[in-house]
Amino acid sequence: MRIDLHVHSWASDGTDSPADVVRAAAEAGLDVVALTDHDTTSGWSDAVAALPGGLRLVRGAEISCAYDGVSLHLLAYLFDPAHEALGVEMGMALDDRVPRAKAIVAKLSAAGHPVTWELVQAQLSEGATVGRPHVADALVAAGVVPDRTAAFDTLLHDGSEFFVGHYYVDALEAIRLVRAAGGVPVFAHPAASTRGPVVADAAITAMAAAGLAGIEVDHRDNPPEARERLRGLARDLGLLVTGASDYHGAGKENRLGEHTTEPEVFEALVAQATGDTAVAASAPVR
Image (cartoon, rainbow, N blue to C red; front, side, top):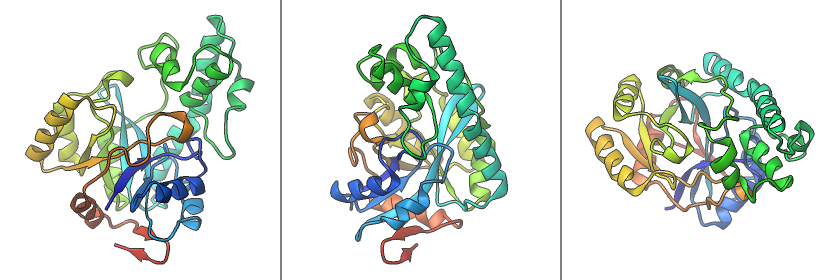
């Protein structure tokens, strides 16, 4: 059983439609895939409508959070999308993406880089929510960098002079809200130091006390030595250990199913959910 619990569509910063994501997941030989777009559930209905036979869909989101000023991402699975307080926080993060992206473009332009807001908008797929990856795509289109990865490595990383912060929900509060919405919270790529500063193990301990269910250990951005440390920490704290691709379509090199979650871990995760169900093409299953 092959399970990939972290995938994006063009509802946020992926390049594939939600329908194409689930079709690609089936073609890649996955049995379970989680759609986890940034701060939105807008791709859920299209993914469910296109779900191929034999594939189970976990509906989720990747929530923009911060702990003591350090940006991090929280994967939220199987939560009730009608939960008001969680929806408000996700909406505030989503709404802040446009002014943030415009501010980044203004900084880049002032420094002489040939990127405009119109060029960024031209990179968006139908229904997409603008974000830094689309600014990266505009830099590629303008010939400044060869690809998204280079854009983030040189100009768009968190320590860059062009970095602009945006709204983040406190990580501990986000965990509590996901739990209140019947969902299951998992810390995404916690050791991804190439993206920017990462939190210390003490933060993960505090998150576990707030209700964190698991850690995404098997992810290409977690260095091998960090994965072993995180496995030990998860064992000490009683947390689930997940793995996933963080697939974005053509936007990143990440491939569907390049890292996966063990079936027994997936079943333990689903057992904690009370807000939603994992959907199959024919009928919902718990």
